[in-house]
Length: 215
View 1 (cartoon, rainbow, N blue to C red):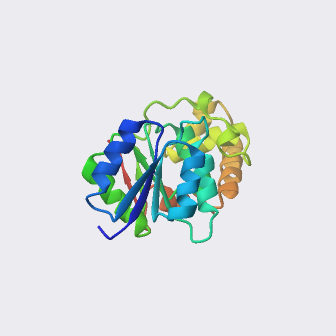
View 2 (cartoon, one colour):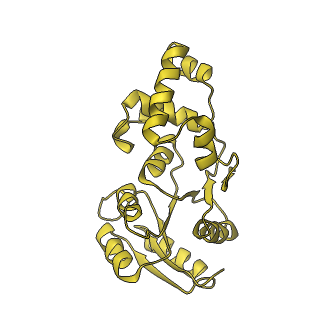
View 3 (cartoon, rainbow, N blue to C red):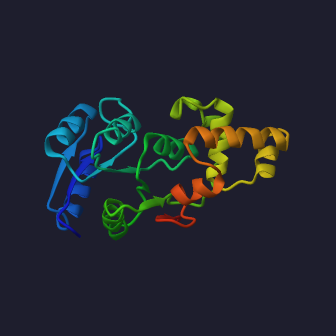
């Protein structure tokens, strides 16, 4: 691995220590933070190449908010969401915050190190850690993760990300296929993508430089 600097942001000391210990043998330096303010201070002063962060932080702040703030920086570091939550809501939140990669905490140590390197090199690593259609509960998906979309659009998008067809989504939500088609188009437009193909190319490993791995 190249001489990279990596900031690990997680509310659990053991996780921070484990990640730092794993990475420090392969990178130039690592730093740790538990709170969003600590993380932001480290980012602005140390300028890491990659930030590895959880979705929930010690101070009750949302990791997606920190991620969004980081990605708004000039010459922003790469952002890797490393979380135990692979729910549709978490995936949508990571996408909306501009995360470069999404890794479930079930990934192996070698996979994690490789994913950090690949993310730095400009690839997107989407490692969900479980079957893409497992444990779907659309009632838990709200528009809070992506304020521009409606609650229904967020539900629809969460199923699109799990590769449901419009017809399958319509059956799941008990709505007309044309209604689903309209809502899919609206949600994708708000994400800044032209269609499913571009969405999957950017986030789900169909072409381009994205890699998706599922357990």
